[in-house]
Image (cartoon, rainbow, N blue to C red):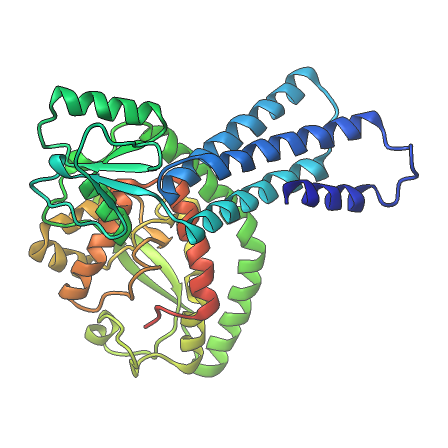
Length: 394
């Protein structure tokens, strides 16, 4: 399939060039791009583990391969085609995501539970094979689930080492159950579960991606904001923007911008959470909420560093304080920058009370615990799907 895509792409690229007149530099550049894309796609087709593990590994592979090629070009001042390079990288990423999705749709992840090592938690995991003997054949499995708090005998230690050398991943059973549900157990969540390595580089890369994302989205956003502002003024008058103090990174307050979607009302009603069928929402406001256009002014907050494109949704200070009193771990959401969209936003509707906030918190803490470029990409793709279908709006 990959070869066919490159043949079609090469035909389109060279269709207007006479036969035999294609420069050798162009041929070499296209051949290298084809080789790098093929290597990345092969990695996506062969890497083992969960969907998120596979996606992270493929992203790393692509960055290393294409980054090395770019470095060689810069250092050697060799010829390269901007068109080929700018087309190859996103198409390779999309193809790799498609391969991973097809693999999971057809067969998913082959999982085995090591029963003697999960006594405290039980061994019932949907779709998993239960193994009892250290002499079992581990090669057919992508994941082996154990309770890392259980003592491991020498016999089982040798068996697990053999399994890992064959390509299996050994994971804590609770981590796997969290990944299946996309949410954590608030009772079991502790700060020691947070990643302690590679976070600085991830934060720097994510900040760079935020800035690039804002630059790319700004031209379209300005047009949509201008049209939406005109519609708001014509249908319900001024003001156009709704500015509210929210709680951000480290619990610091900031002023978050939105397009106004509600009728002017008393202060106590103004700060109440929206509910389904809320009478305060104007008809144009309903359209802006369904399409998420009302959130576009927050690109300014992202550019200032108060927010990120992806992260837990920032709460109003009053709600934040109330929820933290009821659920103290609610404060852990402030360990990362709040986002315009997030893992909770693409999984559950916005919260309107403490019980719904608790449900949302399980997904937000999942993001805080597992934040990665791969997870951010999944959220971005699911956000596009959510906007397209207009779901999860109040």
